[in-house]
Structures are given as C-alpha cells and as structure tokens.
Image (cartoon, rainbow, N blue to C red; front, side, top):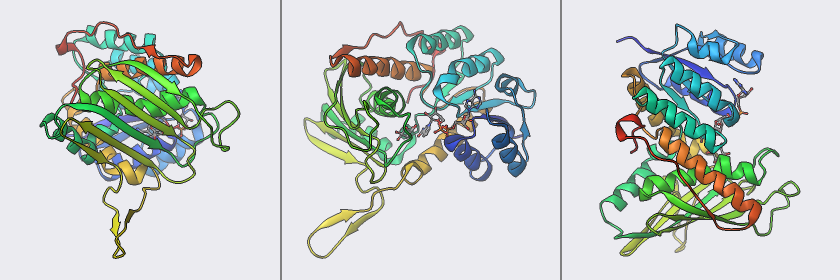
Length: 341
Ligand SMILES: NC(=O)C1=CN([C@@H]2O[C@H](COP(=O)(O)OP(=O)(O)OC[C@H]3O[C@@H](n4cnc5c(N)ncnc54)[C@H](O)[C@@H]3O)[C@@H](O)[C@H]2O)C=CC1
Ligand SMILES: O=C1[C@@H](O)[C@H](O)[C@@H](O)[C@H](O)[C@H]1O
C-alpha cells in the first residue's frame, strides 16, 4: 500500500518535532507538503526532508498530493484550517486546543456531524502515554473502587511571556481537562480558579501558579496545579483517589533512583519530549494508520470542543474569582462524532 501523503502546517517547536517523527519513526507516511507563516522556516524543512513548500495554508490543505493534514499552527488559526480539511474531506490531526473559543469549536462539531464521518482528531497525546493508559485501566477495572478525586500537577520549567493566565488555561490546563474526561469518563460541569502568590518570574498581572478545581457530572473533584515558570523541569503528575485506594503516575516514570541510605528519589524529566516522546509517536502512528482508512483513532472533535468549553469557563473563573458552570451544546449522534477512547 502506498504511503499516506501528509501536509504539515506550522513548523515551530511542535511542528518540527512531528516532522522529525513522521520522517524517522512512523511507518506508512510521507510528508509531501510543508507550510509555515515564516517562509524561510518552511524552505529549510522542505529542503531537509525532500518535501514541497506551499505558501498558502489553505492551498497546502487542498493540494492534490496531500491525503491528510497535521496542524501544528497556533490555536487561533485552527478553526479556518480544520474547516478547510473538512471541506476537502481530509483527515486532520489538529494540535490542541481545537480552537480558541466555544462557538468555533462547536461549529466544527456540527460541520463534522454534517459530513457523517469522523475526520478531526485532536492532539491530546497523554491518552497514548503508557502511564495514563495504565491508570485508566486500573480505574475502569475497579482497582481503586469508585474514584472520588484526581490531583494533577502540571509544571513547565519556563515559557515565553505571552503565557498569561488566560493562555495558561487555554493552552496548558486544557491537557488536564482532557485527562479528567479521559480517566473519569464524565463531563466537567464547573471550574474554579484560585490565584495565590505568583512567582517573581511571572510578568506583571499573570497568576503563575494557579490552582484550578473542576467538578464532574458525577460529583468528583479534580485539582490542578498549573505552574509554567517553575524554573525546574517538566513535571506532569496525576493521582487518582478512590474508595479502595489511590494511584499516582508521573512521579518517577522509568527514572527512579533508589539509594542505600533508606531514601528514595528520582530524576525529573527536563522537557515534554522526555516525558511524552513515546506517547507522541504512538499518537502519530495510530493517526496515520487510521487516516489511511479515512478515519481517526483517538480524541475527536467532541473531545476538542468539550475541552475548549471548560477552558472558556476557566478563563471566566480567573477573571471573576467565581465558580463558573460549564454548559455544553447538544452532542450529535455517536456515528457522526469522533472515536473517544
Ligand atoms: N501536544 C503538546 O504537548 C503540545 C502542543 N502544542 C500545540 O502545538 C501548536 C503549536 O505550538 P508551538 O509549536 O509551541 O508554537 P510555535 O510558535 O513554536 O510554532 C508555531 C508555528 O506556526 C507558524 N504559523 C503561525 N501562524 C501560521 C499560519 N496561519 N499558517 C501556518 N503557519 C503558521 C509560526 O510561524 C510557527 O513556526 C499549538 O496549538 C500548541 O498548543 C505545543 C506544544 C506541545
Ligand atoms: O501542550 C503543551 C504546551 O502547548 C503547553 O504550553 C505546556 O504547558 C504543556 O506542558 C505542553 O504539553
């Protein structure tokens, strides 16, 4: 069978990483077209991997030598670009967030439902991480009894200055929104944000760290410490607390060090590649395999929309200091929306 011909749009940190994986580690895929707002960047990547530059993003999506599209452009461009993929009937792996507001995300839910087949997959790579998968299996298998709470930690060593409180919710906390929905299989119904003392590394007016609290439809509480200027490392942990036990992932990963003096300690993953590199690879391989069959294999457009709706409530919660309810639109019939696993 011939390779899936892919266009990659957005060749910044994440796009370059995806191109690297697609050209070195993923079977059955060829990157035929690349596109970036910055022409030089696109030319350099194209020359390195033998792809063609198409300067206009929509033309890149519609290119006849493109079967499927990977979007690693900023969230603010996703609505237009995902819409173009749906118009062209091409499978798309869209990096999170699906879009940056509820109305456009729901418009994509409706557009995909009108097509009648799932084409939009959202880049929530934690669903492919072995530790998250193991935690989900433990929960589904009843190993913890009924799960009552999740406690999440999400720390980045450093981020650019444009990561203000709102961006931290939409771009970073969005992962814990998806993790909550994935692990607990329940929609989030409200969000509250506590903004305490900020690190001196944060720009004036940015609340870093924040403590975010979700409540689910089943009444479970989820806490998320989001701290994107910790100055230390990339720390992503989740602890599930159930009626019959608790389980924690992300503390040691495979880097545990035990010493003879009766202490334990570990190494912390320095960045997202060390922590989630394997998960991105599984995500991409499964997407490529599914896209070859004209479908998706992972979080779909509804998952992307629900996450955006929770984040929008989160942004309002930062501004108001209040507990803000999440209101979701009607979910289209199962046959028409993305596969959730
Ligand atoms: N799943 C994950 O763990 C991660 C996901 N992301 C997501 O990936 C996306 C990109 O993030 P980064 O790579 O960190 O950003 P970045 O700023 O490093 O790269 C974005 C690239 O897109 C280009 N660009 C901007 N507007 C464009 C347009 N209209 N058409 C084509 N190219 C355009 C820029 O020139 C830049 O090269 C975001 O949605 C972000 O949330 C980012 C980091 C990790
Ligand atoms: O998606 C990601 C970034 O966009 C985001 O800004 C970081 O906070 C996350 O850790 C990373 O996984």
